[in-house]
Length: 179
Image 1 (cartoon, one colour):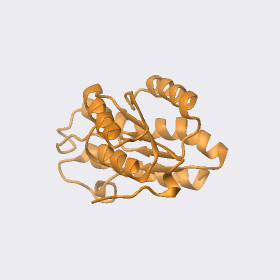
Image 2 (cartoon, rainbow, N blue to C red):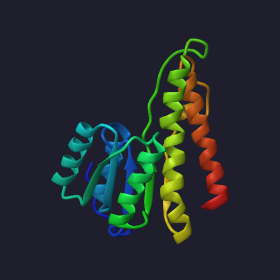
Image 3 (cartoon, rainbow, N blue to C red):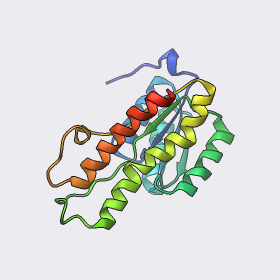
C-alpha cells in the first residue's frame, strides 16, 4: 500500500513508544509516509536502531531514543530531551506493551508488576509528561493502544487483560478531564 504525504501531518511531531517492532514500528512507518516528524522510543536499542534506519531510508525526519516507559525517572529524562529538541508534541502514541500468559492464580505477582508497569504506568507516564504540555498548549492528540482484551476478559491472560481494561479507563478519564 502506498500512502502519500498529507498536509495535515507535514508540520506535526509524533512520538511513538514501543516503536522498535510490531504495532509501534508500523505506526511510525505510516506517520513517516504521511509526512510527520518522528520521535520513536523503545527500550531495546537494537530494534530501535533498525526502525530508525527503516524510517531514514524512507526519508523521514526521525529521532530515536531509548527509554523504559515503566521507569518514571527515565521518562522524565526522555521528556526533557524531547521537549528541548522538538518542543510540545502534536501527537503521542502510547504503544509500548507486553503480555504474559497464565490464569489469575498461577500468574506470579512479579509478572503482574511487569505487565502493569509497562502497559499501564507507561501510559500514565507518557500522558503526564507529554500530554500535560499538549493540554496547556491547547493542541495535540493522544492515542493509547489497548486491545480487545480491554473490553473482554481474556482467558489465560488475566494480567494482560486487566492492564488493557485499565488503559481503557485511564484514557476515558483523561479525555473527560483534559482533552
